[in-house]
Amino acid sequence: MRIWDLHCHMSNVGGRTVHERMARLIEYADRMEVERLCFFMGLSFVNQPSPERLRLENDQVLEALEHWHHRAFGFAYCSGEHPEASVAEIDAMNVLRASQLA
Image (cartoon, rainbow, N blue to C red; front, side):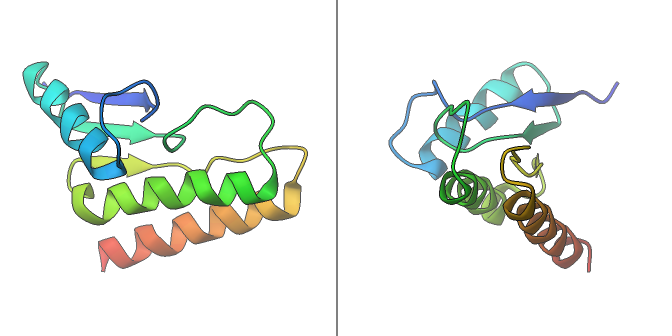
């Protein structure tokens, strides 16, 4: 059976950097035989992010995917309070996915 964890966050995981936290999360996934992790936010948990915070959180997910794209999948962190910024973040994630599939 193939297992994907469809709702992961890098917050509340030990490690100072995206890469340290991802290594720990992959270690946990391996222990539980989880094939892929799907991320929705970066290193922190913000309920009402600014457009700049959306970008920062999504950039952290993209940074994690640079090394772990074979084990992780990222969704754009969006906000209904900032629709234009959210669409831009979705577009950025789609560009990354397309480059990984090429």
